[in-house]
Image (cartoon, rainbow, N blue to C red; front, top):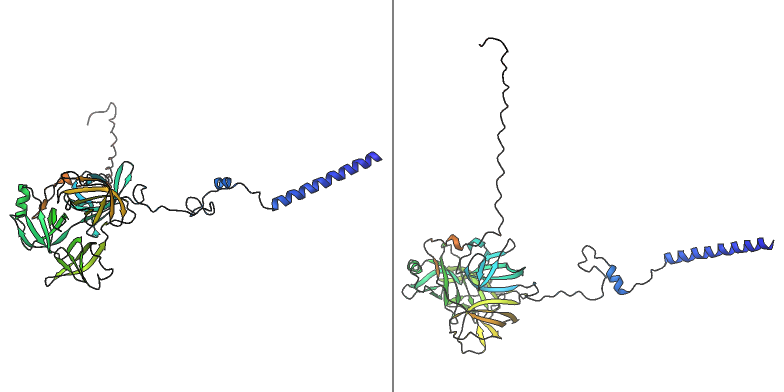
Length: 393
């Protein structure tokens, strides 16, 4: 009897223990999960669509996006200089590639890579892709487009919209003969950079149709409410009064001549460094100022960290490579003196040779037309059998 009682008591305790275990398990299932170390939580978290790289709530640290220039690939390299060759586009000794994503403009209007020519001044932003530099943007920039007001063939000088222009023919006979075909009143586009006194040294002269649109580009001299670029007065107007043009700013203006006066329809100004704030590295071509000036200021840009090469004279062409250190400052790593090359003219419809056209390999290939359907083969006629042993008919 006692043995049976002990067995019943043991069985009862086992039932109570099992019930308590089930209750404890149920309580654990409904309660909060045990906390893991923070590092484990981050490691196991997976990003959700739309959350970005880390997902939402993975880290309590603020997300910081670097808005720096240059070497990190965000800002790219700002380039201002003259096209000296093709294959890729060669500017300031840099080989610049392009692709379908390259945005091309000509004086603020949509342009095409086919319009590029040796001697043109271009401005752009490029960045490294692998071992090559590819252009994000490229703008062909003329210093002035307008009718020739005066020309001196012997001195190789001309005036366009109040801008003094000196051709750079260097005794090239073909260029000299082309220059002689230009006359007062001809509409021309001048590619070139300005010397310290504002004279444009032409690296290319192209004749243009007289469509009435004229442009000028240069550093502004502000006198009261009037803006001057070289000898051209740009009067204020409702379309151009805001924002005000600052003295010494780079200005691009386009419009028409009405009764001998320039009437602008577009006036755009920028700082002396004509690049987006994200650009950090620069390569800028310019003409050397008075070599005795200190600090060294070229085109309104204060150059720090490097000096002009030995033997550089005022008016020599140089390329400044460095990093932006302020709104109007560049910390130069090198200043290189480069040679001046002969002006290329497009006078009276002459064309540039195909050998200097941009390489088209990166452009989409032409789609081959579908093959012509093959003509059906006519059915084979069955051979007629002759009766055996019969007479020939």
